[in-house]
Image 1 (cartoon, one colour):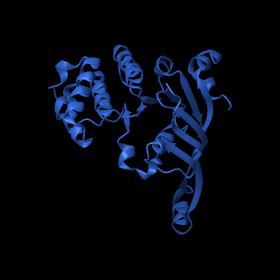
Image 2: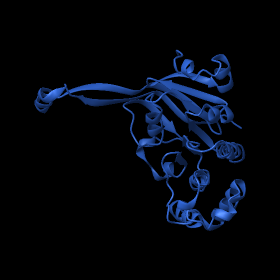
Image 3: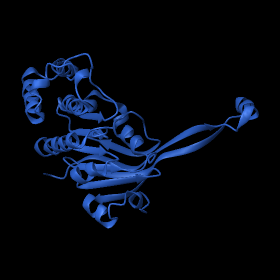
Image 4: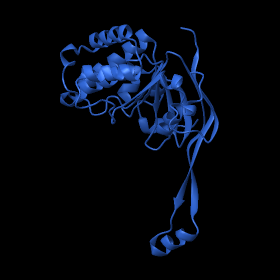
Length: 263
């Protein structure tokens, strides 16, 4: 596969201002007349290149800046400074052509409609993404076979197990064949068997469909099993960008040491 860059950032920075109030009633009164602010740099000059078809892990402790980075890559928030290019678009412009080419799956947030059946949910997203009927049927059949969920298609979403529901989250997200899939904790709360199944499906999607995947997870087994490359972020800065296996071997699987490494 040709090394075509699909995501590129250069010195990407996001700074927030937050109100600081002194303790007690006196501090509250003072805050009414003179507000003091401090700057919080959530993302600090991150430069990143991801090629089309890569499966990249994004890890770091809580508050490291991972979510802020993903929000900028998907156009939810705008950067304070630096440049960003995703599939040839500036994400924060939120052009329809851009939004139609990526998908987001979050393990703790669902985009499914709980009272609908799986078939009706898929049909709804077909209309949202304006997918032609022939393409929809072909894609639906591919995922039904891949996930082995034929018996679940006429079942209400709310009756599904967590593992079954995650399969449906992936089907809905991938129905329009996005070029990029952003994954946030896709195996959270799943048992070992369901987690292994999800990892297997993601490998297949990346390999067979060439979908670029950026995976954020606190489960190092997900990162090890899926990502040849890992980016580590801490305190808003990129402190590692390289081979996943080499990283874990060098630090002997000690996640705390990985997070404390220096760029």
